[in-house]
Length: 436
Image 1 (cartoon, one colour):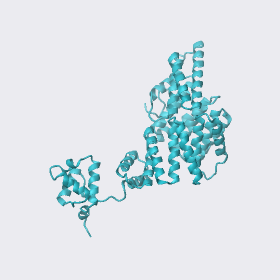
Image 2 (tube, rainbow, N blue to C red):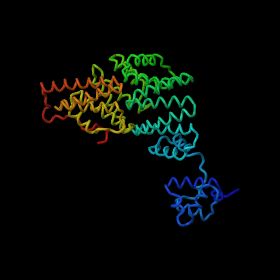
Image 3 (tube, one colour):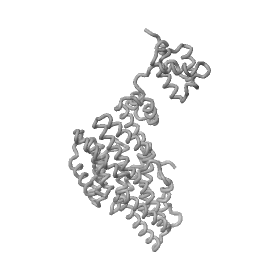
């Protein structure tokens, strides 16, 4: 039985490992060969046409700063090992970099193995707020899934890409991918959860495109036929989506009823991150209802804030700040709203196109109240027209409502000025639990 060192010297495995180690360290063949031997000899080593000697291995180990065992053939491919890490130890902070490296090293891996690694990498990108990179990766995943010919990855890639396109404001392409995904899911009789995932995203796209009647019909059908065996996360998301559609349709009672069911159904111990996101969405919805409920929004934001500092990612904390600034505005605490907006900055990393527009709208509303009418009104008109041109009728209407409200508040403040009593606090500049 050959010893450890004899195993190291075996070709062609030695050559393949040598080339991998050299490329990983960014060295050329000339740099690695140095004065010890010629680059041509190193090339023959890497190709497997020349066996290494112990002296050569010793030189290479010193140059690469590795032990002889580094030349052993690894057990499993880089992608397989990276996926095993995710399964056994979870998604560590450096998992995105590890998956990127494995995908680069293992470009000839099985297509489904690559797709699984890309799926996890896309989730890492989303959590880190790297939205443009996530969209590009999802587009690659659609093409890769199509090459496999398997319906499950084809459908799931399209639905996920549609979600990100919707968040980026590209409603037309989002709808196209959803229609393709739904057709595939129905043709191949995929599990009901795949169809629900696609329909939920379609409801959101239809709502933002102004197809409120179609969106409400789909949402009501999903809510009325929720099977008990459906995962709790999906049942909550169906109710959440239905509440959003009802709110945008102006049906306050149905919106509150659906959102209350969603909030009551999910205990914080089940999924703390979803529990927090649901409260952010509910608070935002209460602030957009025709009969605005700032008290309910304040309670929900307080609950979300207690969890955001523990399980929330930076993008979730920025979303929390945005809704808190909107609450301050609607409660008439304009100085607090301005302070929170300034803390967010002009272009916060990772937030959706819709949230970015809402932040821009809020800044313009504050500018109008502060007396800068001309520029702020012109900017709000521009934002409303841009939303209309991008086929987002619902968002355009939201901007026009915001403009009308700001003008009304500015007129009221001008006719009935009410300065706060001397020494009265206007609120903290940064909420508790958030980075200063």
